[in-house]
Length: 159
Image 1 (cartoon, helix red, strand yellow):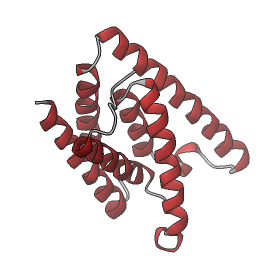
Image 2 (tube, rainbow, N blue to C red):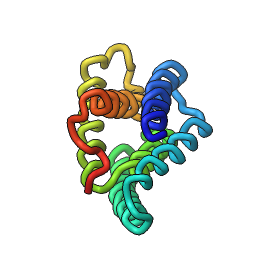
Image 3 (spheres, rainbow, N blue to C red):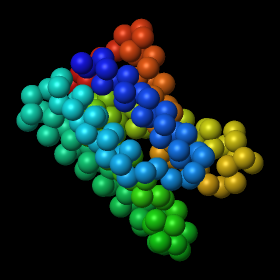
Image 4 (cartoon, rainbow, N blue to C red):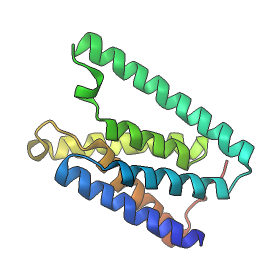
């Protein structure tokens, strides 16, 4: 059952990438499905208390990042937050926070942002300053989970 959940998660992540790149948006139903599936896969590996504590820590990290981004957009860019950062991107951040324990979340979140930055620089002309952040993070995460599923490199759910 867990294997089927991980395969479904990978498929949904690749669909987020496709949808975000093609249509420049991610549907709420797809993100809600990711929340539920990611949360179930994470909670399967831990007792409820550890799952809730790690989720709260992850959400605190995301809150701090969003606050800093809010300040930057307000004072430096002089633009509203959601003119520079999409709601779908925020919800994808929340999905990642729910889906992994703290150590895995911090590594995957950081590296997926670096991956997105590098891709946005390489494909700068094609993207035209509109970076599909949630889609690029989903592509990265789908590849990481897929490779880990095939080769069992590490336990993504270990504390």
